[in-house]
Length: 77
Image (cartoon, rainbow, N blue to C red; front, side, top):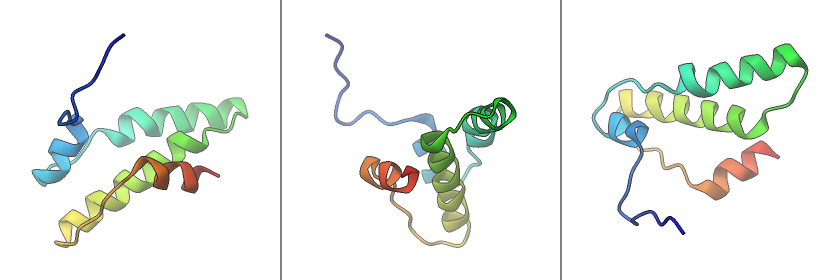
């Protein structure tokens, strides 16, 4: 079985920490748009998109913004 190291991070996490824009609009945004076009709900993708965009804005203003899996699941409900 594949395992992922506890210290592993996504490129978006590195971008957020580095103050760089992420690729969230291209990745999650496209999935949300395609789902809407097809009449399919994409609640997890929409939650990830919104939360990463909020984190980008928080970083621009110097605030902190933590994203936890349970927060994404709760927001997608």
